[in-house]
Length: 298
Image (cartoon, rainbow, N blue to C red; front, side, top):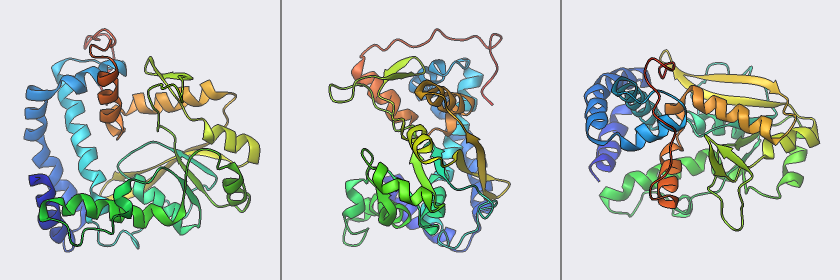
């Protein structure tokens, strides 16, 4: 509740007059003691996650991961406090390649969604029910921030969204016209009767969507991995590709390697670990890796 009030009545008004790079500079300094406290008092879930990704689990690595994770979470809020997101320039956006936009849940994802919308592309995702709730007006003060964020999310994504599953006929003409299709590929689920396991993620059986590979293969459109990262005081487009995947396993391995390289940047990791803990009261995780036996989280 306190965080909701702080962002809605504190950070939002400040962001109207203070550049994002200033907010970021203040934030990254203020996060240091918070990261230390979080690592000391509540680092079990983070330690289990970085063990799954194959990184060292010593305190130094845990502290570094916690700090970088908090920094990414802070930057993910910039979109919601940014009064100029609809006109803000993202470095490299004009030269970014179109086609199938393969990405993962990351801090700048909504700017990538806005870029897709500006080009009359399509965004494949499942809307949150709060997106249809009419925004933050008329709700209690402590609840305004969640409603506001979902309203902003809907403005960036909603009017151009396509529900996942069976959407090929809707997306193929978009790609044929040279417009982008944005797929958040890491939307993985633990297996259910309706969606049985078809792959693994960090050794955990999951149901893994393969729409990016299928769309690229069937339409001939380029598949590119795209992110928008906050770097040197502004948002910047980062792309890799065009990519060719011989099979579903190649796609899975590519995305897993991207997540493993920057594990703190994956905005879905908490949900993934919580679902894993709920499904396995005592989940098996990889044996702890010593600091000397592996590269540090960088």
